[in-house]
Length: 62
Image (cartoon, rainbow, N blue to C red):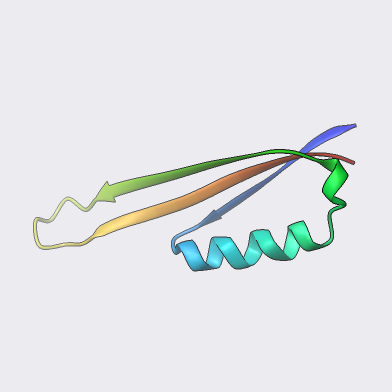
């Protein structure tokens, strides 16, 4: 059976840690693909900072 696991974090290091924890328990032969995305959102106020969303989807065989 093909399954997916979605990860979503505001900081890339948090995404990395979470994914590595999951991948560590996954048999390497069951990994199919990893899709990665970064989105940046500008706050409406001019002096506000950007908000980042780092996400990834792991596609694997269960």
